[in-house]
Image 1 (tube, rainbow, N blue to C red):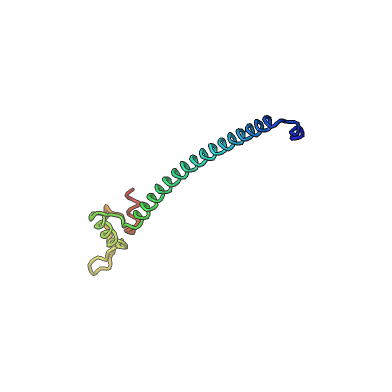
Image 2 (cartoon, rainbow, N blue to C red; image 1 turned 30 degrees about the vertical axis):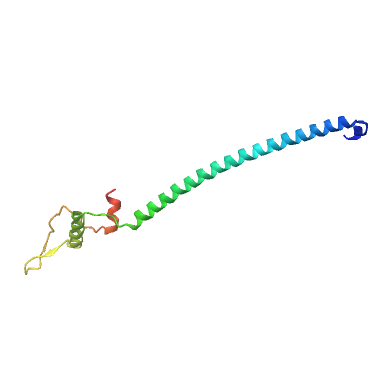
Length: 124
């Protein structure tokens, strides 16, 4: 390419130059268009990732807040825990001065102690 350029007239050379400039202009326009499309897609993706990140941060803060707050337990549950703790180990009682051992009375409450912090898992 370019070997036959010596035989071209001035008008033909100017026409060739104009064609090259037009082709170059089209290529630059196409390149710019593709770059702007790519930038637009990346900006949309960036916005979506920022939104997702914000939601995840809110979720994390909510979970941290839940873990930081002590579980709410009503008064009846506290009384049950207290009475259960009092009954622990009272399986036999000594009778009057004879040294006999009385059978314990059956109670409706269990004789085991459940730690206060564990109650939140039982009620769920």
